[in-house]
Length: 252
Image 1 (cartoon, rainbow, N blue to C red):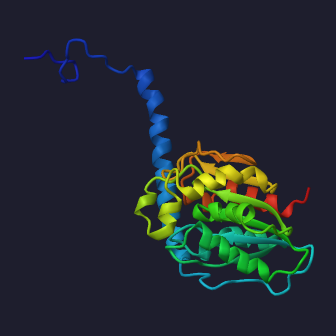
Image 2: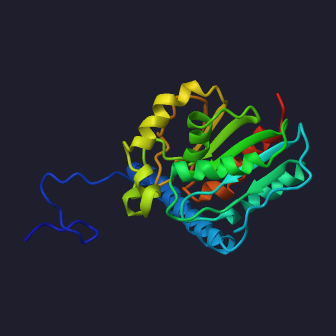
Image 3: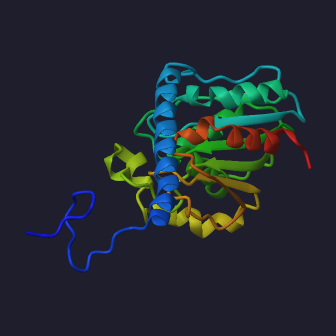
């Protein structure tokens, strides 16, 4: 029979029990994980309530040359409604906002084609800011790197874009899933031509994102890593929303 400790548990020869200091250090990590997971669950619920919104293309009619126009491109399996919190803050800062919804099977090239169609109807001289979440982030870069140059585009911003691939991408249908798999032709092409576009870029990632690693890199632009934010939490995180709003409305 093994000897028993004072607490009644067995004492095994050679076993190393954690010290109280080690147990104390482990608790904050567990708490942070639980908090981040809870925030992501809440973000998913909030996203679900927004999915029925903004299914049709929404383009303001009073855009004029010199106006800032944010074209918001949602991620796969979402809709334009996902951008409602960001949209409200942008419009409060007098920026114009364009949203649209594409199908769940659409890949990078198809979504970039939607962007081209939208920009075709905007006036010359407008200052266009392309913002994309997840697959949408890949599409905005594909537009500026692989499609005819559009001088109206002044910057691109990606939120949780899987430039190095997304975990579980193979589960998604059609071109969307193929394009987001690690090492896909689309991802290789984006990495190869990133430096040729000459368009400023900001990449935003979350340390609690289970789909896209916060260590994801892109060859050009700035990076913002948001602590304890998951893939969908980033859409609603005030730190992300405020940074995007400032990038679009604060002219340098």
